[in-house]
Image 1 (cartoon, rainbow, N blue to C red):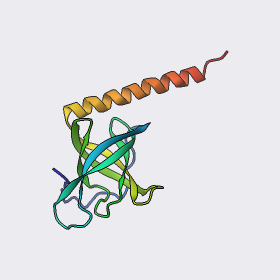
Image 2: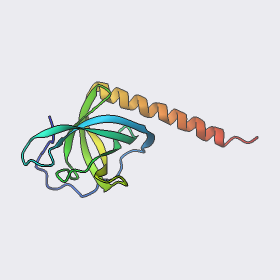
Image 3: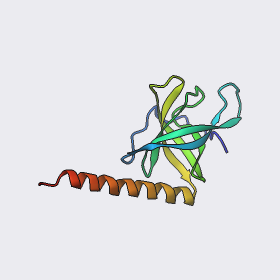
Length: 138
């Protein structure tokens, strides 16, 4: 499964964020993007890095690809789990040849859902502990 084209032309250029995202150390993932050189349905596995994460989506940095646009759906693999991500926004990065892609999880395997929810829960707890520690009066 690669780029998924459902033929819906009513998609907006940018989608609003659904849930809060949490910064994480860059984590490797793979998505199956269309070839930048070929026209047609061919895709190839491309390494991407997750920069932040939420239970509904993520921000990742990946090689620029003019064939990707808002609304494109791609297979994504992360830590031996997989799902389908839908691009919600695209913006240039400070690294030549790369873009930031904001994605939401269009479809996730049960394993991926469990992993993502576990990561987000752990980050929330760590953030809450750090915030409560900062608020303490001594």
